[in-house]
Length: 315
Image: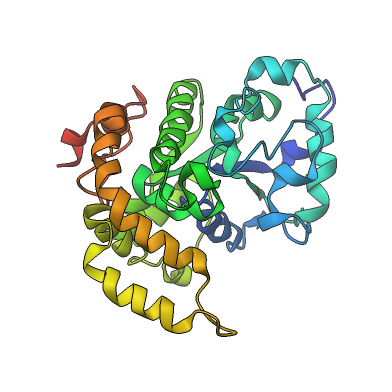
């Protein structure tokens, strides 16, 4: 296998844990919770965005494109074949990451959202590694990341379905890859919000760490509430009040950016229409991944045997 040799490799003394999932799905939260354990260490002090390992290594190409469309890039999906083409990838990744881990800890965590489509690559390089994937409702995730999207791909609502399509594509790739991953835990963001103690207990058992009683304090259970109302109505009930608020603050030093005013207006005009478009074109694929466009705070349990959950299992 790539990354192994007759001699003992330094990472073999540790348990490597890779956390992945689309941006704003909860990956940073989960990585920090794991890293808070006295048994584990996350990357710290790297100087990179969110201390993500993808940005400080040269073994593979990381950070491909905008956060709302990176998975469409042909080099975003890495497998065993990619690892075999770079037999020194293990040493290069270890050299890049190890200075930023506490090597006195047994469990070492690397979190980068694109790990979602690179699990087979890392498994080939680091046999025995564990993978934690966090999924969040595609509509909620798309609404959360659109501020980073381009003007024609959802930033101001226009083109919003493309953001949801990105979620579907990335999770299609993940679901197929998941069937080949030996040590995989899938956490639903929705289940974490509903039962943080139970879900973090699963996480601790899977990774092999102890978590303090305060680990659940990091979970904010109300974060998706406004997204649900926005998706249902386009924010029309709040529009007049929000416009008055924005207009009253325009031009002030601490005023509302004009982009927020524009987004609120375009949401009211376009989101109800896009809800129909997304349902017609992507609804079946979204349901295959265990989510329902009419319920943004529910998700089916992940089925490790097929990689395709069913909503019937959740009811």
